[in-house]
Image 1: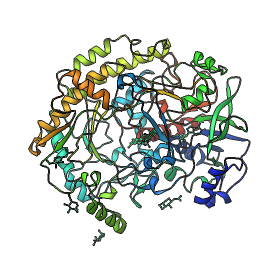
Image 2 (image 1 turned 45 degrees about the vertical axis):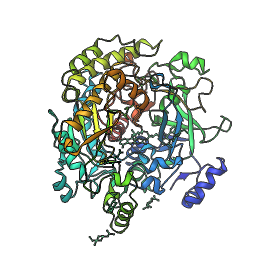
Image 3 (image 1 turned 90 degrees about the vertical axis):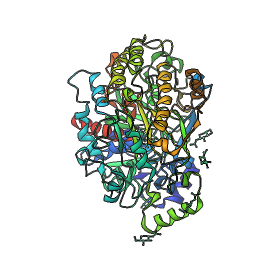
Image 4 (image 1 turned 180 degrees about the vertical axis):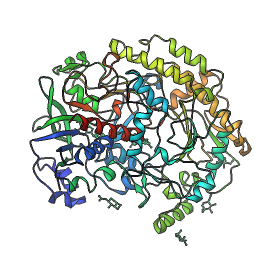
Length: 625
Ligand SMILES: Cc1cc2nc3c(=O)[nH]c(=O)nc-3n(C[C@H](O)[C@H](O)[C@H](O)COP(=O)(O)OP(=O)(O)OC[C@H]3O[C@@H](n4cnc5c(N)ncnc54)[C@H](O)[C@@H]3O)c2cc1C
Ligand SMILES: *[C@@H]1O[C@H](CO)[C@@H](O)[C@H](O)[C@H]1NC(C)=O
Ligand SMILES: *[C@@H]1O[C@H](CO)[C@@H](O)[C@H](O)[C@H]1NC(C)=O
Ligand SMILES: *[C@@H]1O[C@H](CO)[C@@H](O)[C@H](O)[C@H]1NC(C)=O
Ligand SMILES: *[C@@H]1O[C@H](CO)[C@@H](O)[C@H](O)[C@H]1NC(C)=O
Ligand SMILES: *[C@@H]1O[C@H](CO)[C@@H](O)[C@H](O)[C@H]1NC(C)=O
């Protein structure tokens, strides 16, 4: 029973908590001075690792989380998938630096900020990458690495409790699944809605009309193709299943070795020589270090603050590129140039958008998007009465995950060859450290292979169920690399400086132009042509590469909220930040377990992999305890 609330923290926050969750008050106790493990960030990975480290009762663990416990309907509601980001209290939101190649636009940098982190606001889509993605991670370390598809599969199984679709849904939509790719013990649930849009059956068939598109046995089989996949929904209540409900609710309160402190922002890791001894932290909305408190970690400090904040904390602690640290007046503990480099996310708002003008099967997702009040009322009544129907759908459960040789059978080899032949330093920021350049070169070699492989998805068409604006394309493996760096004039309290460096590698545009041609083909050369497709954007008159490029620069958003890579698990001479045991190079007793350790993107969205990595991380940490 220990959800600590620090009385000295800001009164406003305190009152908000008190009103909403009176039980937290009764559970107030003092923080201990030391724990075996201090976990920074109580998000997706942090709460997963904390649950696993406390379950045998041998180790004491403190989780420090900047956000608070939140359980409003904005967090729990499944319907449409994005209620979480309708309430600004659930997430942080700051601006990236302007993107010159996106006409100078800035991008909203968004992530969950609550107990549960981004898993409390995400779009519910449960997807994993291809076998080749995970094998590639290990291959950066050599053939013996256990970071591989086979090394991660047990953790995918441990991380997810799979519930098959209903027989009706299976039969009607021809949904395939194979339970060998899933587990049944986790309290993180993966399930299907009870209803789906008729148009999705046709959409799946239409994509199958494209030569080379396969239909794997399960969304988790590690293959490319078109398939149905579950949502992170607990089917017994049809509410969001996330790190807090699965790894904290009812768990933390029953374990005396597990403490949580919310509403607290960690500023830095403390060191004695090279040994991490603890952290210092302040109330979440403090504006100075006055009143900072410290807590000690006997065994390890574990960073799980997410891809945008993990590099900030490391750099603010003296671990990062030395020139940046000196500029910020921070004492250099380790000169580690990879911290905050290698930043990647998945661009969307690309491809093309079509109206299937003669599609006339009711309903489809446009009844929601275009506000058919009658339909919305009926769906709500059904959900309220039976917890079934359209409101059990989150943001989607089907899509295509296609290799470049299917998207552009005539050009993929040339594109891959041009990419591989690039000078690796040419498209990285001026002055990039030679180890980071070497890491990019190694990735380039591996990813050029992926661009030619049938086993690596590059293009994702995620099916929304809309007829009048059909087209939701995601670029799974952009080649451009960004940075996440502390603001040298205010490293602790200013948001990190995030630069997506969108489209800085010109190969990205070459690939995106192929995406536009291919998306047009999906609508005009498959059975979709029977529904009189009319191109809404960019418009049939936008034809030449220059015209398509101009459209993309005005439209593309370089983030689908899937940031990774800023504390990459790579050899140190390839710009790595953590080794295969997830320990930060050059220091003792400091590890990173969140999405920032992924060296490059999986060919999928990121939550499923984040949970699996965290499960593996917990075993690695316990093995050296
Ligand atoms: C809006 C949105 C939609 C998404 N949709 C999908 C989807 O549909 N499917 C999918 O697969 N993936 C999706 N994702 C991505 C997925 O949710 C993330 O990849 C994953 O949750 C990241 O987990 P994490 O542990 O790395 O970080 P997080 O879960 O973000 O946890 C980091 C935690 O650290 C805390 N923190 C940060 N700084 C500090 C500090 N200084 N002190 C203390 N605490 C701190 C934060 O408040 C946060 O709670 C989405 C993400 C977002 C934001
Ligand atoms: C969160 O909200 C849901 C839905 O209102 C409720 O069923 C559940 O008990 C709540 N959880 C906690 C831990 O308060
Ligand atoms: C994030 O902030 C920007 C700028 O204030 C705003 O335009 C945008 O709508 C916000 N995003 C969300 C999801 O609220
Ligand atoms: C799509 O086409 C239909 C039928 O012509 C039309 O009523 C509708 O307004 C169109 N929608 C859009 C977004 O153009
Ligand atoms: C709105 O929904 C109702 C109820 O499902 C349906 O009968 C009607 O045709 C829909 N209207 C439109 C414009 O699609
Ligand atoms: C709830 O389910 C029952 C049994 O199938 C059905 O008769 C009823 O119409 C449903 N209620 C609503 C509002 O859809």
